[in-house]
Length: 330
Image (cartoon, rainbow, N blue to C red; front, top):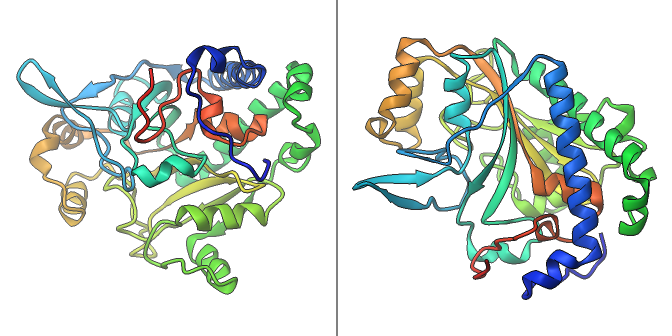
């Protein structure tokens, strides 16, 4: 990344014909091609999740949901596919999808270089898996995707000015791992005021990220900092069996995931603890009561991942038609 953050595009034509946009979108295409190759090779089925529904993921931090009128009923645009991923395991044990999501992020995030109001996510869910199973799966998947892009697109990386040596440690695998409490201690040790009871804030993520030379997982976030679907650690109450994957070089979070809870009573309790009305989630809770498989999974932000791999200054450079918070655009 350079020190100067580029201004968002005002002319869609110039943005689409920019050599940087073309290079970034070719890298993105190869990353997704490699992801499909990897996941299908491991027996995953690709599904097409809905983009509207009566409810959506309430766990999107700080962002607002978008309501639409669905024949007189108030529906939501999806903020993530999490509820549908769990439900889809009734059909297949291992599924993935690549789908758009919409989150009205706070206006102040327009200048963070890492937020879009509309973005795509590569979602993966595995029946019967543990948190640690899908952490390893995410690591193997990321290594495969990056290795494929580097092998197939040397010309594009050269034109983007992205040095392949930036991924020397990533390609070795064995990403770093640290618990949320350790991340908090490191941040507080360097003077960053990170709360021990909350998600890592954006500045804290970037600070940790700049201090690493390979991707790393942050695990075991405190209960209350995430959605009702993350399973609480049975031997360590108050902590969740979840994780984020952060990129090095200051790029920050790329992926979030967890082992899910599929216990009806626990989900009802967790919904109430997080201020959610269970009545809104009737279709989902009916399926859980009838028996949704235990599972674990994760979602990788496609534009954020492309930004990191292509070495872009801002995430909007990884979208053909970027939607920045508060910015009117096609």
